Image (cartoon, rainbow, N blue to C red; front, side, top):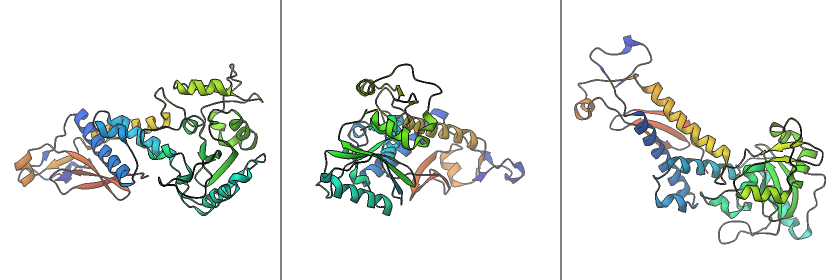
Length: 315
């Protein structure tokens, strides 16, 4: 086999241009390979994906988007600077758990056990995170039988970045649409949500209750704060199914990568008609996708050819 890098002189005489399957078949094969890689990763980590176990080939795009959404809910291990809101008050009942969480952030330890248990389910969503970019963490001090930190009433609401975490408040569980969360962010760290600020004021002043009801219907809305500053979905937004808009966009990007790969490869690979492969399979090649450690490799069935392509983001 010979790869043509637009230098016709490099192609041995008598070589035959390899043919690819139709574009739709090419894309779906790579998508299915990626879905199998995702399923293996989810099972290996002990997470749950019931919706996608029933008919894993029914909607590959949905599975890829769900995985991207799950990645968005997980928190990578990294030493982070902890920033506290000036108005922060920590109830005595969760003070020990709060200090434990802060130490874990500062020391780069795993804080994912402090997340909602839905974070371990591929087919679940976190609309507070998807809409406003705000995580919530439980403040227990011991793990329960599921491997998560013991649930608490008061929880931490925070925005997590690569090297920093901004703790907004410690408040009761369930304040998923409370505008006060954004009020605190706007007052103390407006740069965190500046990209999502609206030029001017949002005309409709939705209440926290209104926002919660709209979210249940899969509707994003503009948020007008007390000082008139207005924002729309600092977390990227939710779609009509309640999932992450950003995760769907990431899944779309993968499909576009598959299509672009087809255009790049087509007409660039040549086969020797005297080789065993050509004699057994003819000129058609089948590009596949596999994982090696943290990388995705392209390879061709029945041929000793592979190429490192993309990074794989594991859970």
